[in-house]
Length: 235
Length: 210
Image 1 (tube, chains in turn purple, blue):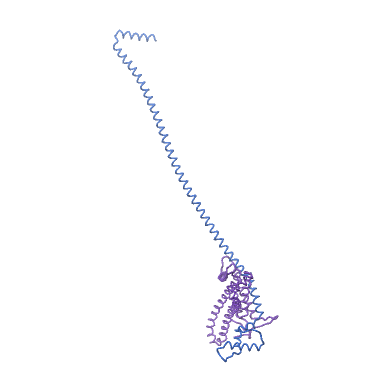
Image 2 (cartoon, chains in turn cyan, orange):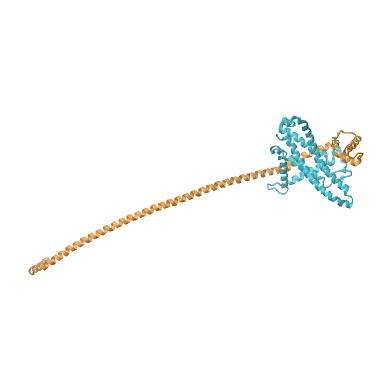
């Protein structure tokens, strides 16, 4: 089940070419969807524009459920990009996977902990940045000692725990989905009868993975806004 | 968590075996080998640090930021603009509708007032006309009465005149008649001689006149 990753080292940095490929593909798909959907904008929305506007309102509601729109409006674009990027990434590994030789090329980019943790760290980093920017250094530091200073160690641990859980929850869900897909494909689907038998759990699991991928994209966006609101909102 | 400090190839192998034992603690005496152990490897958190491909991290960050910027410029920005424009448009429309509604209300009120005024005016005019008619009738009647009075007076005067005239005529005739009667009476008392004398006198007179 575990395939080697196509690793390349350039200037002391290790690149997993499969990740590079999939990140690029996911980004390109997200960009294409978004741009095609918003190409013919009109006052009376039709087709894909409806969907995009629904998505915008959806993310807007996520933000509004966590903080004032006055503070949260600036995260609208971030939330939209995150939810679309993660959703598309989660879906990429579902229909098939490419294995060339011993190397796994096509998979969900979010099935790699490095990627998900990168996103998680970015989000938490942003929450700290905006915490300082919006509340000032004093207000930002104060949040670590509220509601009482005894909680400071817990608050400190919380930051790391938040980051880790945010990244690993996404990774775990998607990776598990792909592992099981791979297991069904390689373990069950051998020979004609095997293929027929494997088709049913395969479809069931793919459907479930679509569900999980959607939920995870939503959860990641939701938690992003929750963490940011903890740092940003003024109470 | 298991520490992720880097070690040699052999160290890694040894550690993964330890981890494997930890993982399947419920099954004593069993160790994992080969690909099975590698699956577990990937699932153990410590390996993330060892597999930390900084290149991937940087690439992911870079791509995400690029994507964010591109989407903001080409997709979300315009879409938000349109949505905002629509919001404004709707707000404007509502405001305009509200305005025209109040305008219509004002106009209606005004029209109603005008209508009321016109009705009042008409009522007044009718009243005036009635009054005027009444006055005129009164005047005509009084004029007629006066005229009638005048005519009556005139007629009376005429009658008086006629009567006077008649009376005077009758008086004249009575005088003539009385003279005639008197002369008749006188004639009857005249003697033959006197008659003869008178006739002669007349004849004489007539002759003299001729």
